[in-house]
Length: 80
Image 1 (tube, rainbow, N blue to C red):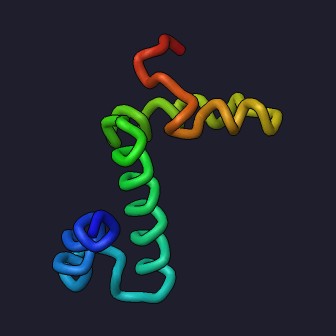
Image 2: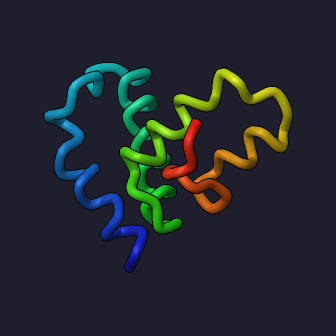
């Protein structure tokens, strides 16, 4: 199924990845992986979307600002 296919690379690589030596590192890795897969599931190129939101997060001040950065609401090609 789709969920199993999405986590397969994570399961295969988890022991070799940086920061996975601790529970906090594993949590951070899982959170980042979740963001990447959510972007992909919504038709975004993960690197472009992450760069887009990380450039704009400091200026976000309202719930609407944060919601606009969700992968199903944003267009990473929009100029800053």
